[in-house]
Image 1 (cartoon, rainbow, N blue to C red):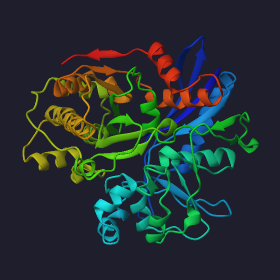
Image 2 (cartoon, helix red, strand yellow):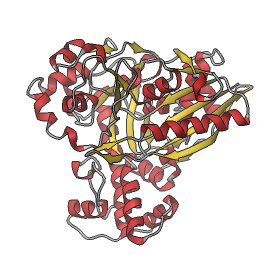
Image 3 (tube, rainbow, N blue to C red):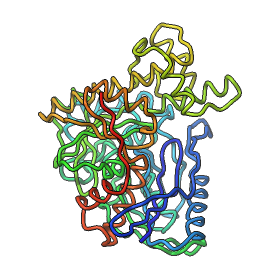
Length: 453
């Protein structure tokens, strides 16, 4: 069987085909495209129409190459569009837009930070949907569609709100796995804005004929790309630590229930939902966004495009641990002159190679920081680290991570989000029995490289 995984990240998207034959899965890229927010009417907005054109182009390529059984969509968290009763969608504003500045103080004046964590399981962060809605409140009669569900609606005409993506909003109760309706009322948001929560595995509907594509079913998969990536972790043990590497780096562990204690909050950890109702206790870390911004800045300065391999080689040739930053400092959150900001943070002038090495070293050290707190809060010791996602193509980052944590790193698969997306579809279609079988198939289908400290 064949399924299509639409994987949308904050810097680019892909349409991937996944095939399952004789208990082995393979994936191939059909179409890749960029994703850059654009400043429009004073706001940093996502080009939803352009992204949807690229999605349809990828689906058309898939149809030309052969039949497929279903489609699933995952995307980055927190962002959304408001859709009215006439089917008109308001612009989808990027989480890096400055409209949320100042909302932290306003929200916390109504709900103390500790209470907000206890009720939602998330750290206070102005990029979360709660703060975006506080900055620009929804109107009566509007429905909030988070990004994967927005594109599902555009394809099928059917609205839903999947659990894992809803868990990024800071409006979901992590225990009941339903909206915190009291919190929604306290914030003054209209309750009809929030659709009923759906689990992965739901058949959303068929692709509408008007798109000129095969009218195949769209299956609700874990809508948050992190949840799909975690589902692809090829772990045999029930308790494991993972690092999902992309624009964001996520360091976490999979649990049966959320941990919303004061100790977890003070440790910088938060709770999201994964596949099949699993809880993900994790730390979001500003990840390869820093490398992406350095690449853009250096390329604009020099009038050329640096490859990631070239940048990694530059970093590898620079002295280790000469400079460090906190990747999560607010100074690095927005687009801008990243070389200047890093040098401002350290108070030191740096060559291009030193800037790059500083970021790689700092990411590995922040992974260690997060892992230590996860172990302290859960009382568990993780003997090895699973790394998945596009960032593991950097052997330097994987090796530095093994050194920083003093434990083996098992890196793979690279196409983690697409694989997790596809596996969820195959379970929904009855081709894979459950999550345990899915992970076994993934272990036997994709290469994993070991890095020892």
